[in-house]
Length: 416
Ligand SMILES: Nc1nc2c(ncn2[C@@H]2O[C@H](COP(=O)(O)OP(=O)(O)OP(=O)(O)O)[C@@H](O)[C@H]2O)c(=O)[nH]1
Ligand SMILES: [Mg+2]
Image 1 (cartoon, helix red, strand yellow):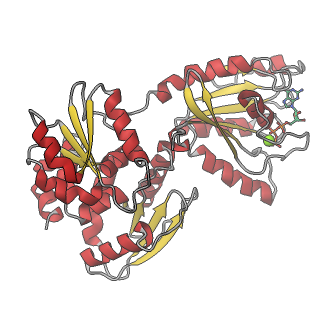
Image 2 (cartoon, protein in one colour):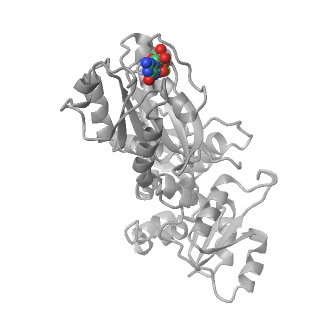
């Protein structure tokens, strides 16, 4: 896991009509033949992802999409795929050419980008063809967003595209840190890992690596230990740590070993907050008490993976939830990039930690569930709740969650 995971990369997607040169541009930008180019309209049928380092911006993934002006049934299917890309897009490149006027399709696309708060640049491709260019660039209907003239064919203007992307992407890449508001320079932070049979050999899992890096980025001091050496670690310190972050599985043990006034949370709670809106997850978890016989629960995972016997989504969570509520619940499962748009009939959505999804995608999913009025919790929050440790694990975020640590109702409902 030494490469930057795709979910952590800035997602830059190209949109536009068929044949405007989106695929040619992605090839020119990446310097590789990653996408098929042809004079036939509708060549690209599926989104194409290409990861690369775009210095000084850092790790990005370029996404080529099918052209949007295809009214055929197949075209509409492709449109759905393009919409799914839109949900992940951090920066958009809207491609036009001198041959196509700025029209309703471009208007619609800009409206969507504006609504979704996606910064974008207009690329006037095929600038090697002069005809029609002036009429286009002087068109008052053009949105006030940077316009770059470029030719994927000759390569002219490609460096300008990169420069414009860098400018636009700077703000987007100043990403929130996993430990925002929790860790400051000089703090001592203990990370507790649980290395059982299920742990991958020879490395730490991604969320742990990322938290470790986030702590170091804050110029804080990170100590990594297993739960079995935690007491020893604490004994060697001259004062208590500023924060302890633990694997959920050993939260109980760590909870007991630590003085009550030492802030304690879990990797999965940090991750839930990093990927989504913690407050919303917290609101949603409170509705577990409303679950009733016959209710349907959707369990959604961001990626497909090989399911082991005690798979968390299909086995562990349904079992724990049935046990806690004592109700007859039925469970459906979805996984992969596609998230069921039809949430009708579900009483609750339980989402995975989303380590394979980017923040935009997760925000979309939370919004969608919110619009449909279906509470959506995630694995980390749910398991903390089911294991009766949510109160302490959320205490470090009390300010964000509205003084939750002091709320009696919260304590009564969540701690048995
Ligand atoms: N003259 C000129 N032709 C270009 C340029 N960029 C692309 N083309 C040509 O335009 C045609 C379409 O290019 P593609 O890159 O396949 O276009 P696309 O937008 O990906 O098309 P779809 O996948 O069908 O949506 C090809 O014949 C390219 O060679 C350019 O800058 N100048
Ligand atoms: Mg194409």
